[in-house]
Every structure is written in C-alpha cells, then in structure tokens.
Image (tube, rainbow, N blue to C red; front, side, top):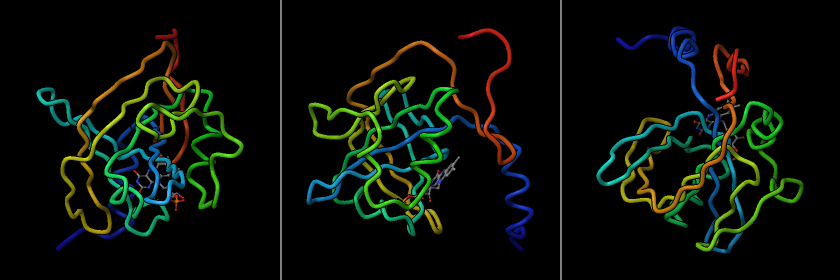
Length: 161
Ligand SMILES: Cc1cc2nc3c(=O)[nH]c(=O)nc-3n(C[C@H](O)[C@H](O)[C@H](O)COP(=O)(O)O)c2cc1C
C-alpha cells in the first residue's frame, strides 16, 4: 500500500535540492518558464539530464511541442525569480532579464549555469512527465546556489564557492 500524500511530502521535504528555472517555447513561439527542483543528471556519455514536469502546469504542452528546453540554475539571491516562475502568469518574461539563445530559447541573465537540452526521451511519471534531455551547450559562472529544503529557501552557510 502506498504512503499517504502527507507522509510522502514530509519525507521528500527532507531532501535538499537546488532550484532551477526551466524554459521552453510552444509551437507558436510563445516563451514558457517554470520553477523546477526535480532536476537530475542522468548520464555522462552521452550527456543527459532529466526534469519532471507536472502535467497540470500551463507549460507542460510546450515541452512536447518544442522538443527542447534550457535549465537555468538559480543563485542564492534569486529567490524572487523562483517565486515568479512558480506562479501561473501568462507572460513571465516581460519583467525578467533574459536573452534568446542561438537555438531560439530563453536564457535567464545572471543564472549560475545553464544547460541547453534536446529532448531525447519522455516517460510517464504518474502525474508528471519525465523529460530526458541531451545537453548540447553549457554556460557557467561563479557563485553560490539557491537551496530548497523543508519548504523553505536556504543559502549555503560559509564561504563562496
Ligand atoms: C521550489 C519549487 C520547486 C518546484 N519544482 C517543480 C518541479 O520540479 N516540477 C514541476 O512540474 N513543478 C514544480 N514546481 C511548481 C511549478 O513551478 C508551478 O506549478 C508553476 O506555477 C508552473 O507554472 P505554469 O503553470 O505557468 O507552467 C516547483 C515550485 C517551487 C516553488
């Protein structure tokens, strides 16, 4: 018998994660972005990562349509961006600094790192879809990440990375 939702949430909240904003666009060119903590590296050769996207989100269809996404890792001072992209707003990009990559997808200015991905597999994952992306381009910079743990945003204590 599966655990209850409450037990599941309580246990999962004890797993600390980074916070990402994953961007994509639909087949009309409209930009989408969503706060995602369900991000994981999968494989080195080939370089694969995965994200899990709730089927109920407004962005879900766009991942299927575009076949591509960009993962932006948030910095410790970017909690506002996490909250912004976790809200079901119609146009999330008008007030957010970003640029369009050569492949045509939005990259957040000043993220800690970004990964440009082509979707190579997608799987049913209960109420989510698991999208596996092959990483085609990376950008990195220095700084500390935003952390999410027990329902709150945290920062790494101590020295900068
Ligand atoms: C810290 C944090 C992590 C989240 N992680 C995920 C996630 O991994 N997958 C997901 O589908 N939604 C996740 N969400 C919820 C979405 O960001 C939220 O449902 C958002 O409003 C969806 O936007 P949309 O409906 O405009 O697509 C997370 C929210 C927060 C605050």
